Image (tube, rainbow, N blue to C red; front, top):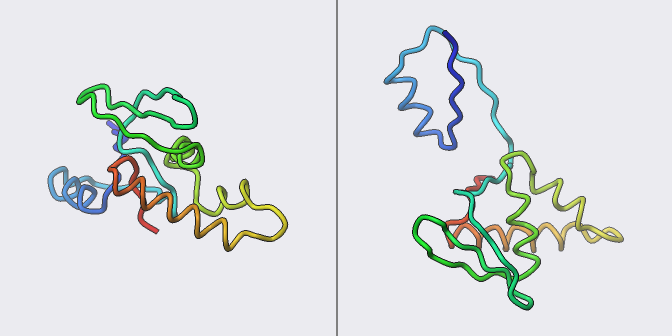
Length: 116
C-alpha cells in the first residue's frame, strides 16, 4: 500500500520517518515556496482586505498588495516567480525586498509559512 503524506516542516518529516519506519521514501522539496497556514475567508472593505479564520473568528486586516502576495501563497509559487510578475523596468531588487518584507509581516500574523 502506498500513502501520500504532505509535510510542511522538517521536524514533522523526521517524526514520520521515526514513527512509520517506511521501506522506501519518495519526496519532493519545494524551494522557496510559501504556503498559507490555513485557508481563510476574506472580504474587501474599502482599500483593506479582511481575512477571517472560520474556526476562531479572528480577523486580519491587510492592504491590497499584501493580499495579492497572500493569495499566491499556494505552496508552489516562489518568491522569484512573484518578483517576475511584479517587476517592471528592471526594478526586481526593489520588488524582491518589498515582497520579502510583506511575507515577513504575513509570517508575523501567522498567515503563511516560508523558509528561504
